[in-house]
Image (cartoon, rainbow, N blue to C red):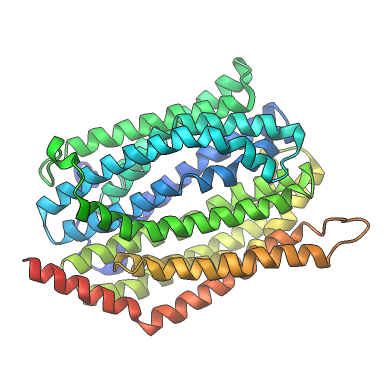
Length: 467
């Protein structure tokens, strides 16, 4: 085995499509699992060493944190698409300027979050009816994340660039290193230094900063593919706008999800600390269950982007079918495993029997939805790789804002009783399942209609004209 080759940029325009997609997706899957371990480690440590209320505090902070981080999601997705297309077209100059501009855009957005985040964290927590017993912990957790945002943002941007270049292994290795460090620091800061909930946020910020630094060192050693100097860091209006144009719809999509989570979090908070803690546990397990879907979605984006850049449009069609089939099979397997082994996963977070039983009940509601998300992510990934980032955004807008949020509040209202004065907590999870299922159906129908193919053909013609 060529070990050095594992850490090199990879050309996805050659070879059997499904094999290239799987080879690229597996390191990303492991990396996404490691990324999920950041938040999971925080939850396990606070749940075990501090208590269920601390677990609820971390959960209440999550949706707000995600909402304010979507700027980086947008830049990272736009960077990955453009890098993949220029790399596939072997366009060194535009590839170099794209990477440099992404670094500068990330610095600007990081500065915005560092200053704005701490100013809005407590007002947002109050707006969401966060219980007084956990609001101080939640605020401290958020503020440390915001002040140390550069590590998170640059890791995601650099990892997006590496994936666009076909290298999904390097970012994985760096993330595994920082994940191990994060877990160790979590335990040290909480159990030994007594820093409480803010301690786990501090551990994560330090670990993410190290992963970003390692990614930068890797990119600096790839001078045979692109140039990275001060002139490349200067913003080029047209290129920067292209990155944002490609990436912002994905960022808006994430913002929609996050805003919906924030809105639904207010409903969740009304059910009390036990349900809040159960929601945290389910979402942590859910995060791992979703990882294959996100990994295949990202792999399909890079695969489509590189092949479109190279003019291999026939491979995009074939790869979309093969990749989606594999993603659905993997997701179905995970769903079955969750139904049989989910209770053991819940016990990792807490020893409270009532909390474990409630969490498992909610997970069973969501289980079938993971297969639907596999379809949405895979086909949506192909559309994004073709440059059609608006369609997935509109699908998310419809399914999340117009369906999930009203469904959650509507079910809660209809199920109010003396025992459940604010409604049954299952309302939150049923609404999510409905949203996922409808999203998969709409994505499939839109994909078959083929509007994204027109975008793919126009990109291919543009690349050919540039040559």
